[in-house]
Amino acid sequence: MAEGRRFELLETCASAVFKTAPLDRSGTPPDLLKHTGRRQGAQARAAGALDSRRMAILSGLVPVFLIIAFGVAARRFGLVNGLSAGGLNRLVANLALPAFLIIEIGTASLEVSFSSRVAIVTAVASLHVTAFALLAAHLLRLPATQRGVLAQAAARGNYAYVGFPVVLAALGQAGLQRAAVTAALLIPLMNLVAISVLELYRKQHEAAGRLMLRVVVNPLVISALLGLALSAAGWRPWGWLAATLRVLADFALPAALLALGAQLEIRRWHGVWRQTATATGLKLVVLPLLGWWALVGLGASAAEIGVGVLLLATPTAIASYPVAAELGGDLDLAGACVLVTTAAAFVAFALWGLVLGL
Image (cartoon, rainbow, N blue to C red; front, side, top):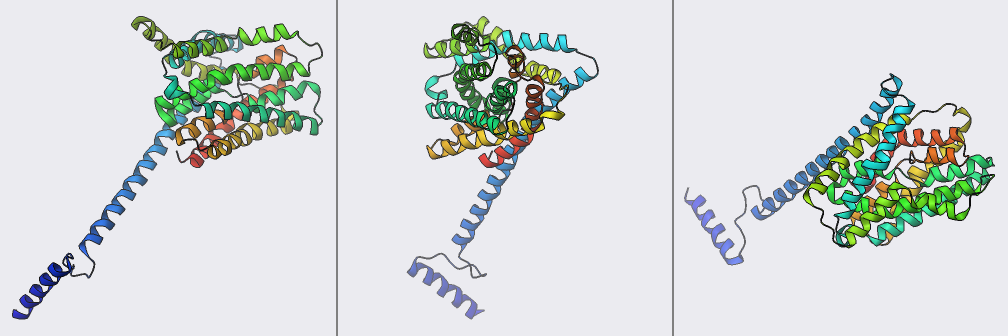
């Protein structure tokens, strides 16, 4: 017993002389044990937060594609027909989505939501992939009616119908506003590019003035540019106007997804599988990969990279189908590209989410 007390006294004296903490009986310093415990706890909390975030994103993505599937089922079981689906799409495109763009972009702070890097990279990447698609169409020796359709399908994304819900699920309201501001620049550009490449291979060319007018009078283009102007002016809408626009904006995304699903139908696409696979690879893999590489190289923030990549990884815009029909493009290929890229987008978003660490 006396020897035990003598040992404890020596240990206490040694700790005082050398200014160290008393040794644990296991031989490990208590400070090291505490530091190790804190580090393990922090790692466990970080892993739990990451898993929770991934589950939240998955919970946001699944409803997007389920609502599209509901639209497909509604058309399949006769709840809507082609006429009513087209009417819903026109209502969304001419009223609900413009209201969404005006309220989201117009009330956003450009200092916070606008990123020149995201805007420039997404635009330049889309133009490069358009050129890649035209080269691929030449190498595949496609007929003239399919070349413009392939280029449009590979670069023109479904920003509003699919991109915005996915960005909202992955990056929250701040990410959605940044995506809306970026899309305000992309929508006019890609409308012009899509019409131009289809017109390039059309037998009867349209006058340049009418071509520009077709782009300018598009309701989405008008509302996007109006939203940018209002945001730059520091617009703060009256309460009743903001409430009205919010109601329409809340209607826009689910109605857009239902309309998208109800309009997805392909008559004959067994003969366009190579073209469709090429467009799908360019749209869901090459285009977002190019944007990711450029944004990382420019030192963009994680939020900027997320918005840019998710916008570029959106499936082919459903609006590409009626534009192709109006300008003499191959409708089987146009429809197949919309359907296949939309179906494959779920996997693409999930994989890009892993790359981005979302």
